Length: 178
Image (cartoon, rainbow, N blue to C red; front, side):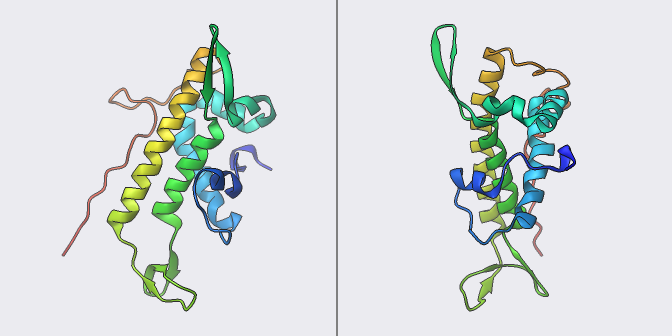
């Protein structure tokens, strides 16, 4: 497999943190996982560390899984990079992928009889934002772990925008009505 096209997590990883239907197939969720890795996590880790994690996953199991670690005599906890990827992936899936494409546009299936209704943009946006906030909270525990342990390659080639913020930040949305 090509490393940068291999998801670091699976649907089962997302299910540890958020409810996701058993019927969601890898071909449906994996593009959202890969987007979260490339667009959200790469910006947070920096290009060199991100590339190393993708190419040498086995060398970064503690970073990925998280858990307790000690620093200067104190015990700390990291949520792990898998949690961060799972929550960013779920945010993308909720906002962009949790619909069914029909001849009448994207709809939300309401029951087994195929009754459907349009999904509220406000509802999707709210869920998307909440998942991204939760992912960032988990990221802060991972970032603390990386800083406290002087993790190799962290902090190199960080993606910093014009505002001085690391990462891609939040998207801006406008609702257009007639």
